[in-house]
Amino acid sequence: MNVYNGIVSPETFLGQIITSDGDFGFQLTEEIQGPIILRTQLGQDSYVRTISIPAADTSGLIMRSHPKDQPYDLRLHMEEINSGFFKWNLYAIKGVSIVDGPEGKGSFTSAEKDFVEAIFRENLGCYTGNHSTIQNLRIEKDDNDPSDYAGKGQDNWIFITRDTTMTLGGLASTKYDDNGNIYKSVISLRDSPTSYATSHEQGHSFVAPISHAQTLPGTVTIMRGDVQSQLNSPGPADCEARTVLYEDTYTAGSSYDDVLGTEFNEIISGIPGITIIQ
Ligand SMILES: [Zn+2]
Image 1: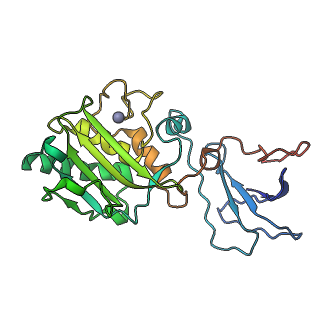
Image 2 (image 1 turned 60 degrees about the vertical axis):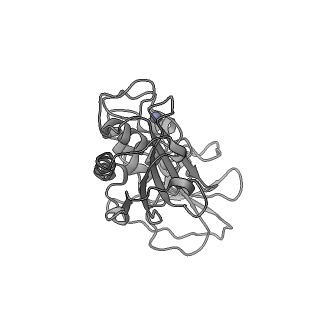
């Protein structure tokens, strides 16, 4: 791990910690103003993690660096689907409401609602890692009054609704705040729900709120937008994206340089002449 003092530019290199057991400790030998920048990597096969903390006594700090063992470019994929590192606060989600479309735009049969719920619940394993907070996620299917589903007081809800008037087969509209926290999602399905359409739009809500996968093939992600994936449920790249996004120590709105960095020895703003031995 490399330690820098980051209040001025360029940053000052303060030291390096090398451990084999994962524990680390560092004592400053000079007084600094901070913040302190810490950078770590678990060997060459991991992404580089960088964080910034105030210059103060700190303990219990956890830094995780994501393994780089995928047979594809995970960072590129994630920058395509979620450029802003937008994520739900999984501790805040209140539930899912499967409701009929507004203003006569269509409705689900009771069997269709059951189908959507089953697919949605099944996919929570991939999209949230069955996070403890959503294991008993509330899913309402008896709310046939969608009149205010887009109104106030509905934050931290996911709505799934029918819209037979759309050109697209499915649409997901996701709202997030200035810090990158997703706080609302409205999924619209045009046709009688399929596993593909439900899983794809659910993917927009949890891992791909900004765009579609462009590089990876439809054999590993259901988030292609140009062609329908061969998959009918989320693929390995979709679940891998979740393991990055919903890692609790990675905050919403993070920079990919900080969570999936690729250059351990790159000084943040550059100090020529320093060689760091990794
Ligand atoms: Zn899409």
